[in-house]
Length: 340
Image 1 (tube, rainbow, N blue to C red):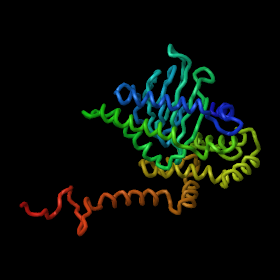
Image 2: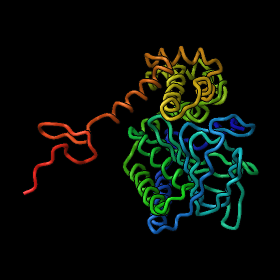
Image 3: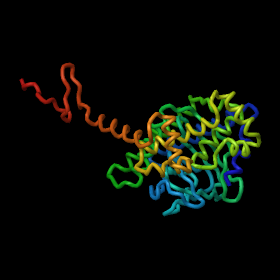
């Protein structure tokens, strides 16, 4: 159960509040390098569940607003979705598309005890964590690190394109997948080698609270008291510590991260606003609308309409800009100069 996660996460955090040491970050780099080389040579085996039943509630399953990436190092992972089961073996890479409900079970095999590297995408933040088996069939975090990623949409867009190409039947499918996957893994490696994150500088309790908010975003029972219980402290203490460390109230942080997820869903899906509200952890769509308007200055529908209008406006822009005129044709001047 998810209630057990904070304990294992707390064990992963050192006394300095840094969950990943030098050797573990070096291992992350080495895993990414091996996958880059395999992808460059067209040898990286890929698995992608189908995008069906998006953002629907199913017993024993959960979903995220952004995709996830799993690099299987040892053992096997079985992903259950509403329509299929995908088995990921050692040496394979799995992309779980955004919004796909899933449950997972892990097991050892001839390659050794289960272990994988998981890449998650959050609000302007990217996480990498090693997972191991903590109970029969149940994975959990062994070591985790977050990286500030202002251009997170680039990572998620490439990941989504790879997933779409996997189920496509175009002649260039293999080239698209290998090229995009090599580039994506290279960007991840560069981030691990050069990046740093403010999340990693937080003291342990604050670090854990931020991680739990992102991990349980759609949980309607997620609140300050619930977080405090999982982190074995009082709600008043956690609120005071969080505000002192970050300058932001914890309740505001929870709402802000939820609204960030809702904005993404409004921009990238055609889900009803009530569905987005429930997926963002709000039990009352009307309350969701009030919070959304308070934090963004516009209603969810108004935000969606504005995003669609801006996309339409960009499509109506000129194709080419010259020093003395603009051109709306497809790459050919309206009045080409006469031939010599």
